Image (tube, rainbow over all chains, first blue to last red; front, side, top):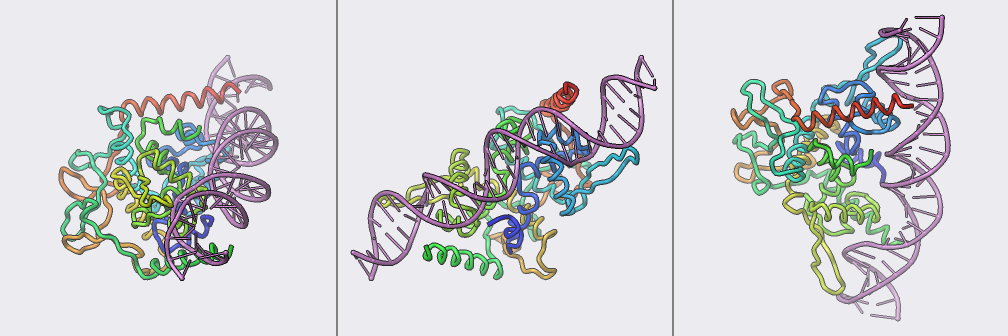
Length: 169
Length: 169
DNA sequence: GTAGTGACTTCAATTTTTGAAGTCAATGAC
DNA sequence: GTCATTGACTTCAAAAATTGAAGTCACTAC
């Protein structure tokens, strides 16, 4: 298929993944969330190769997720920061953090490697799914999913195209 | 670096990404969340190649995220479902959905492609960060991040190793 | 006995990623 | 004034991952 096509899907999850859905991209964004903004530091702290880092940052800049700013004239020096669009990925990061901490803990008594604290009350914050109407957090069992018309049609089309291709062999 | 090393990081985000952090994996998991469980359907609906799908499913099974179950004896037929560990990724999916819908909407009046409804009250649910102490949802500005000791040490080590390597050229 | 179905595997061609090395324009230390 | 260092990359060849098409295998339905 290729990710330019995925980018076109009616599914918002697919469209999100087309932009930020690979390992290095998400790790780079993690660093930017931490406030790392210089190229070499990003390279050191993520472990990505410089080539990869350069192409990813370019892509993220094109997609409006990170901003590249010149902070020094001569020699020219640049720094990378998250745009509002990028900062909006915090719930994704945080959901990943919670999952990783729960299911891939290194030891039972691991200290939190990373905690987010609510500035006003000092308590640690967790990601959750909440119902805006009753204000309650929901668990998996409380939820029912449904497709919109467009996405349902896309899915039918995909299934049919796949079957057709198989038959024509 | 390579992702076996990332898997070892003190950062739970990195460890989560080592398991589920690539485009196809997350798309496949999306399908499993939708209840798709047969190989060919997964292939049709994600658009992944059969080879890729086979290797990803094997990996996910090894990691305990999906379960492979034989539902027919002869001919042998298998189906894939999410384990509890896999189901726990729902907040990740949902955070991606919210972000994709907000920043990569296809039109201003796009109907939701996918909605999750709270079974008890019928209202659509959103992912959010909530403070368990005051129960309020938090925005970026309300939050302060901090590192644990182990992770802070790992980061220092990475920076030093990187500098050392540079100098030794 | 011919045509599927479902869950894959195999293979060659293309694309990505890695890892090491190099570049370029300053700046700081002696 | 010169020599090492910093910061932000680029270049290149080798290795790994992905794609897309085709094939396999064990049935079942007509």
